[in-house]
Length: 138
Image (tube, rainbow, N blue to C red; front, side, top):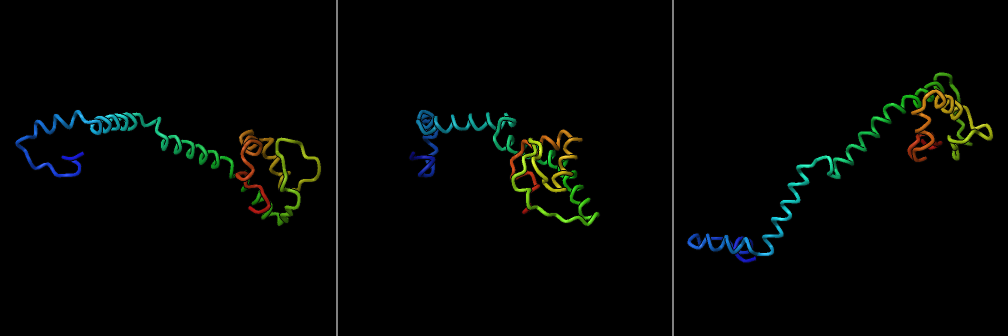
Protein backbone atom coordinates (compact mmCIF):
# COMPACT_ATOMS: atom_id res chain seq x y z
CA UNK A 1 0.00 0.00 0.00
CA UNK A 2 2.65 2.49 -0.98
CA UNK A 3 1.88 4.56 -4.04
CA UNK A 4 -1.73 5.79 -4.39
CA UNK A 5 -2.53 5.24 -0.71
CA UNK A 6 0.25 6.35 1.60
CA UNK A 7 2.35 8.46 -0.76
CA UNK A 8 1.14 10.61 -3.62
CA UNK A 9 1.69 9.50 -7.18
CA UNK A 10 4.06 12.02 -8.75
CA UNK A 11 6.25 9.99 -11.09
CA UNK A 12 4.17 9.99 -14.28
CA UNK A 13 7.00 8.49 -16.37
CA UNK A 14 6.33 5.10 -14.78
CA UNK A 15 2.54 5.38 -14.61
CA UNK A 16 1.86 2.38 -16.85
CA UNK A 17 4.04 0.06 -14.75
CA UNK A 18 2.68 1.38 -11.44
CA UNK A 19 -0.97 1.04 -12.55
CA UNK A 20 -0.40 -2.47 -13.90
CA UNK A 21 1.36 -3.47 -10.69
CA UNK A 22 -1.50 -2.01 -8.63
CA UNK A 23 -4.09 -4.13 -10.41
CA UNK A 24 -2.40 -7.34 -9.27
CA UNK A 25 -2.25 -6.45 -5.56
CA UNK A 26 -4.59 -8.22 -3.14
CA UNK A 27 -5.75 -4.90 -1.73
CA UNK A 28 -6.88 -3.68 -5.14
CA UNK A 29 -8.66 -6.97 -5.94
CA UNK A 30 -10.49 -6.81 -2.62
CA UNK A 31 -11.58 -3.22 -3.27
CA UNK A 32 -12.84 -4.11 -6.74
CA UNK A 33 -14.79 -7.02 -5.29
CA UNK A 34 -16.37 -4.74 -2.68
CA UNK A 35 -17.27 -2.21 -5.36
CA UNK A 36 -19.02 -4.92 -7.36
CA UNK A 37 -21.01 -5.95 -4.28
CA UNK A 38 -22.01 -2.37 -3.55
CA UNK A 39 -23.12 -1.81 -7.14
CA UNK A 40 -25.22 -4.96 -7.00
CA UNK A 41 -26.87 -3.81 -3.78
CA UNK A 42 -27.59 -0.37 -5.17
CA UNK A 43 -29.03 -1.86 -8.35
CA UNK A 44 -31.46 -4.12 -6.44
CA UNK A 45 -33.22 -1.63 -4.19
CA UNK A 46 -35.98 -4.02 -3.06
CA UNK A 47 -33.55 -6.36 -1.29
CA UNK A 48 -31.83 -3.65 0.72
CA UNK A 49 -32.51 -3.75 4.46
CA UNK A 50 -33.39 -0.07 4.77
CA UNK A 51 -35.99 -0.42 2.01
CA UNK A 52 -37.54 -3.43 3.73
CA UNK A 53 -37.65 -1.63 7.08
CA UNK A 54 -39.28 1.40 5.47
CA UNK A 55 -41.87 -0.82 3.79
CA UNK A 56 -42.77 -2.48 7.10
CA UNK A 57 -42.99 0.91 8.81
CA UNK A 58 -45.28 2.18 6.05
CA UNK A 59 -47.51 -0.89 6.46
CA UNK A 60 -47.72 -0.20 10.21
CA UNK A 61 -48.64 3.42 9.58
CA UNK A 62 -51.36 2.44 7.12
CA UNK A 63 -52.75 -0.15 9.53
CA UNK A 64 -52.75 2.35 12.39
CA UNK A 65 -54.56 4.90 10.23
CA UNK A 66 -57.38 2.42 9.76
CA UNK A 67 -57.48 1.17 13.37
CA UNK A 68 -57.05 4.26 15.51
CA UNK A 69 -60.24 6.04 14.41
CA UNK A 70 -62.26 3.24 16.03
CA UNK A 71 -60.38 3.53 19.31
CA UNK A 72 -60.64 7.33 19.20
CA UNK A 73 -64.37 7.10 18.50
CA UNK A 74 -64.79 4.95 21.60
CA UNK A 75 -62.88 7.54 23.64
CA UNK A 76 -64.95 10.37 22.13
CA UNK A 77 -68.14 8.52 23.04
CA UNK A 78 -66.93 8.41 26.63
CA UNK A 79 -66.11 12.11 26.61
CA UNK A 80 -69.40 13.19 25.01
CA UNK A 81 -71.46 11.01 27.35
CA UNK A 82 -69.36 12.14 30.33
CA UNK A 83 -68.59 8.58 31.35
CA UNK A 84 -65.75 7.83 33.70
CA UNK A 85 -62.78 5.75 32.68
CA UNK A 86 -62.44 3.32 35.56
CA UNK A 87 -59.50 1.21 34.33
CA UNK A 88 -59.41 -1.08 37.34
CA UNK A 89 -59.79 -4.37 35.46
CA UNK A 90 -58.31 -3.59 32.06
CA UNK A 91 -54.68 -4.55 32.72
CA UNK A 92 -55.08 -8.23 31.79
CA UNK A 93 -57.64 -8.12 28.99
CA UNK A 94 -57.43 -10.90 26.40
CA UNK A 95 -59.42 -9.86 23.35
CA UNK A 96 -59.21 -13.33 21.79
CA UNK A 97 -61.11 -14.86 24.74
CA UNK A 98 -64.64 -14.17 25.86
CA UNK A 99 -64.93 -12.02 28.97
CA UNK A 100 -65.15 -13.88 32.27
CA UNK A 101 -66.25 -10.87 34.31
CA UNK A 102 -67.28 -7.28 33.83
CA UNK A 103 -64.28 -5.72 32.08
CA UNK A 104 -65.65 -2.22 31.98
CA UNK A 105 -67.59 -0.17 29.45
CA UNK A 106 -64.61 0.94 27.37
CA UNK A 107 -63.43 -2.62 26.72
CA UNK A 108 -67.04 -3.67 26.04
CA UNK A 109 -67.34 -0.93 23.42
CA UNK A 110 -64.04 -1.99 21.84
CA UNK A 111 -65.24 -5.61 21.76
CA UNK A 112 -68.47 -4.50 20.07
CA UNK A 113 -66.56 -2.47 17.49
CA UNK A 114 -64.19 -5.41 16.93
CA UNK A 115 -67.12 -7.73 16.25
CA UNK A 116 -68.16 -5.43 13.40
CA UNK A 117 -64.67 -4.82 12.05
CA UNK A 118 -62.38 -7.82 11.39
CA UNK A 119 -59.33 -5.57 10.98
CA UNK A 120 -59.85 -4.12 14.47
CA UNK A 121 -60.42 -7.61 15.88
CA UNK A 122 -57.18 -8.85 14.33
CA UNK A 123 -55.37 -5.80 15.70
CA UNK A 124 -56.65 -6.33 19.23
CA UNK A 125 -56.00 -10.08 19.27
CA UNK A 126 -52.67 -10.41 17.48
CA UNK A 127 -50.69 -7.20 18.00
CA UNK A 128 -48.37 -6.86 21.01
CA UNK A 129 -50.06 -5.64 24.16
CA UNK A 130 -47.78 -2.60 24.36
CA UNK A 131 -49.04 -1.46 20.93
CA UNK A 132 -52.80 -1.82 21.46
CA UNK A 133 -53.38 1.61 23.07
CA UNK A 134 -56.01 0.19 25.40
CA UNK A 135 -54.11 0.14 28.69
CA UNK A 136 -55.01 2.22 31.70
CA UNK A 137 -51.79 4.24 31.44
CA UNK A 138 -52.36 5.38 27.86
